[in-house]
Amino acid sequence: MQHCSEAKMTPVFVLGVPRSGTTLVRSVMCVLPGVYLPPDEFQLLSVILRPDFDLSNLRNILEQSNFSGHMRRRGIWLSQDELTTVSKHSTAAMAFQALVLQLAKKEGQHNLRYWGDKTPENLFHLTEIFETWPDARIVHVVRDPRDTVLSMKKSWGRSVLRGSVLWRDGLRAFRRQHHSGRTSQIYEIKYENLTNHTNTVLVELAAWLGVEFNPRMVENFTSEERWSSSKATGIQNRSVQWKSALTPQEVLTIEQICYVEMQDAGYEPSTAGEAKEPPHIQLRLAKFFDAFRVVNAYAKERGWAAAIAYKTRQWSISRKI
Image (cartoon, rainbow, N blue to C red; front, side):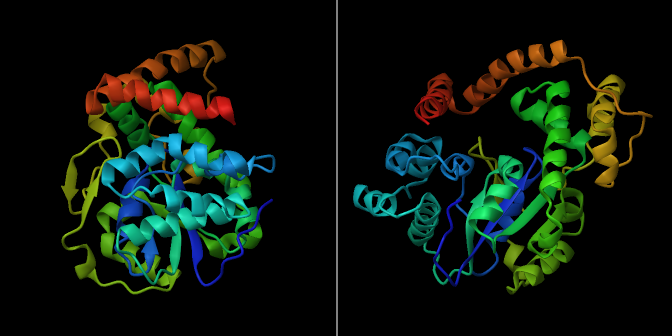
């Protein structure tokens, strides 16, 4: 695997099952001094860290990625000269670090101690991250599967069945890659603890990173949803909504699919008494219909043209890799 040779700064990656609160954690981490993660998900780390990745494709992939589109929308994407400089690094890992540091510079962030990325799905690629950056820090965000699946349903229209499988498989993948020799490099945050005991969690997180934290840092804190232009002031407590928003059958489905993993994570089933694997044919059908629902959800935020362009860019990049 590729190894990044630049010193003095430590890579940090925020990951977890989607809709677990990774965006919130990324936002509050960037309030801490010396910490910078781009304001949108890179999403390509698992691709560029492949041993067979062709570095000559890097510039085109970056230019055509949804990540570059998000950065352009924010007015902080790289110029052609800056992008050329980034793409000339000898490894994709070094190029990625240079890219993040260039974005930090555009946002006025200097004297960094930590740089990195918040892409939830990186929890499936923890091994590759540690092979590339042996000193990497990992912040793993966990949320009650019932609230996580509910959030997927409300935000994207994703089915309860597939949302439950995604939560379960995400926790399985993370635990499987949780190497015993790296426990000091992994910090786990429960979403419920962050929203209910914000200062306590942030004091502990700052101490783990070795940076300063003052409660005044989050007095005027604002966060935003990745697919929305809306922003929220303060850290909103959105936990434990499932009791009133999910049907008894939906709760049972989630708890049966996530039965073992949710208990390992400290969440007790309210109805299910055993684990149950969903029928394969139901999963295939749910996946088919979820694809339309997710695009429709994006279209409601940005319009159909943006939604189609978003998925087209993803498809185009996957075809070229």
